[in-house]
Length: 392
Image (cartoon, rainbow, N blue to C red; front, side, top):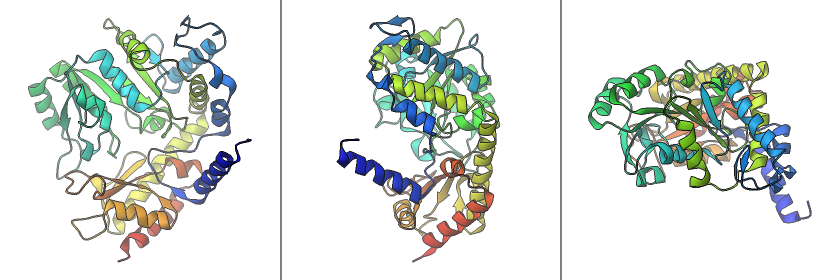
């Protein structure tokens, strides 16, 4: 690279990544093949539209790449092209979710999504997001005592509010989402059921998640860069039926929100999806889950309050504040970074502090599992976290 300034900064970031323990739940480490696709000459191609329906010429190769990514998306999750439509063009998870709403929810319609402080995502209807500015959020949360979803209360609210769409998914909820119960609730109130599996998609592909959203959902969205271990990108799946949801979503992605797709990104998605369809990836997904369970149990045994009492996924949510007896999430994150452990501060259910300095931290095991860490390593990491956060 001739630009020595950027070259040095990239090298510095690579060094930083290799020198820390990465417990960011939304990060992972991609393969060299994924990086090679991202840095390819596909960056040079502009291709507004979809395979076979472009607004530019010269698409004989890129049409094959996008079609291959769609085929591999179906294969990775064990679903059929007869039942599911796939869009691999969303640039990331947030625009993918907004595209679904734009295509399927009327203006000022209702989105029923998990509250941000209970584990939901900004794009599940939060007021600071476009999803909360153009549509109305009907929030649901967890039971204050058990810290797991109260499906009875959720159904009661859904029957009263009649949302247009219900979003089953999370960014900081460690337990299995019961998609069957969500399906029953959506049917009862007449809503579309959307599952945002961005965080646990790799566990679904690796057969390590307790339920598959594809057995119950109308729409499934996911990012690719978390447990799925791919590039920063997103995919939208739409069930094929008389409603033709896929057609409406395609129009919302392009021309509704985006112009030309990033073909280098789509090629990298295809590479990652092929990797996610292997027996090796299935072993990886199982280890991610084992590691998270051990990390949660060790921290709990050391006296820390683990939200919901544990985890069924890659994610662990820790109450570090504990009613003022511990440290805030911001201070916890800063202390841990000083010893080379990278986490993110995070709100917890019934949060009493500011989102910029909340009561907890969020941990994830996907990246360190990619590096080969197993249960004994998680025990050591838990000890390091406890030591760092116990200092006064």
